[in-house]
Image 1: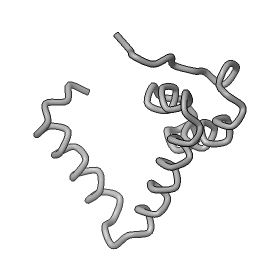
Image 2: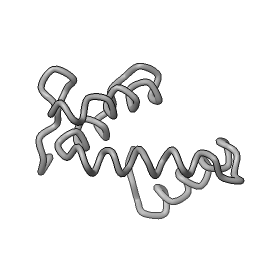
Image 3: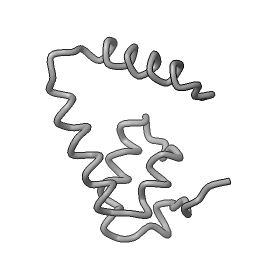
Length: 80
């Protein structure tokens, strides 16, 4: 059970909308649950998007970044 309300584009706080739109664009046009949940806190969502944007310019290519993410998720027992 979710502990926070998940938002869609039609009921999210207005400050979250630009970040949720950017998140949907990154996810191939779909607004995934992560961004729906983060939409509850515009400042947290903005901070995440800023951090993610900063990390994209790093030394690791996309494939390596994704491999690390999958490995960390597996290590922590994530089911998705």
